Length: 194
Image 1: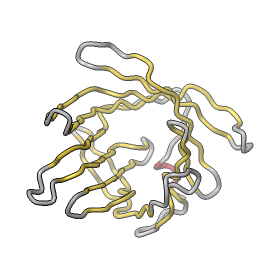
Image 2: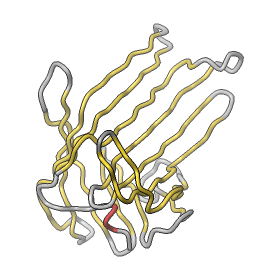
Image 3: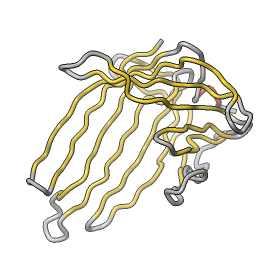
């Protein structure tokens, strides 16, 4: 079923390095941020749908501030999908059994409009930093590129770890020059896990 790509184990912990860039047309600025996020699976419970679910606490660390609590995330696996509830929205992150070029609506359970997720790579080895991962799955969550806008959302999961890379680019461009006017981009990448 490939549910190993979305492991849910009490007390497991994943740390990510995050690089983020924000483009502002208010003052024509480009601001870069680097920080770390840490997800810890803290407990298991029965959710409102009657499914076994897991509470994940997310913490953030910056150059000037040690780990501080950021938010709660809920994750669960049903018989045919992996779901995540974050920022008051429920998303379908994976479907099972996972096959190459499988597609599904990642926003099936929220009001953000249909996003056709597609599996681009399946069971592929990947090296991130010094970490050699035996098996990963890459998903294109959403992509729309035109002369004035770019929206690209991609995620990569590794067996027995879960999410290892998340890339987002959401920018507006000047139609004449192609220069970025406003928006943001960021990349979350696995640093360590236990």
